[in-house]
Length: 372
Image (cartoon, rainbow, N blue to C red; front, side, top):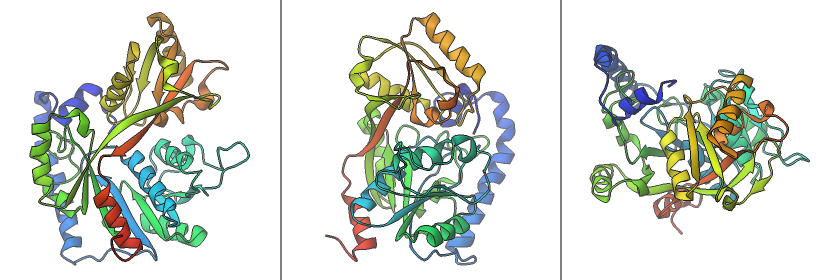
């Protein structure tokens, strides 16, 4: 959803909706009805989902974005490869030249420069490229396509995985899944309670009942009373896990040189991003205790231009910042646009699951025939 930060905040329920948005109620109701009927067609058995010749683990959300799907996909892929399970990732791809086409984003094999044979973000979109680069070390290929069955069959024919992870797959009911993981923003699990376009929901709230596991992201930033209330609801569906983002390091977007977080200490930072949940980036930076001289938010999946880069560099200079800092997702779209020696870094962050027991047990059941 390419929306202004203020409107996005209203859709999430952080502020009142503008009066004109209530004109969208009929469209929102129709959207929710259509999503509900689609889900009913599959749950009732009226329509049969297609099956891949391997296990399918879906990672998705019930809202329009910003729940940490990308780091969760990376985490699960890493967990599976550590278990010796040959894994691939299926992703839709968004705002790349190859959007809608089924193709291999990465074969999972590092190249001599360590960056692998990965399609550029201009072709595949930001999230597929970020996933592919993050999973080069464990050797996980990434295949994109809006038709996940065709993408899955391409992955099977090329790489013969034992498991595929379906990125953003909660609403993609055409493909059978063996484990359905739903991510929810602990602060705004259902947004303002309305479906698109009046709200942030991609379907009725009751659609959450299709999950096997529910993971609340950003749980550490929510008051315990509010978190317990939403968890009590989630527990009526299945197992519940808490997860939170944590900073790892920073790296130079141009040179890929990795540096410790202490590099930021005592230096002015101009922070910018174009992600679905910019608040998560702000919270991580607050935890690192950096000195933010100024910040800039773009819409999710923003396609940066040379004009944007010139503006950012100038604004950073005027604010007294020594360093420009953004997210890894933004970084993959900036590499070819930066001048030779910019102090422009990406924050490398991860998603930590507080108690991964239910997830471990689910993976054991899928690949070992039972709990360890």
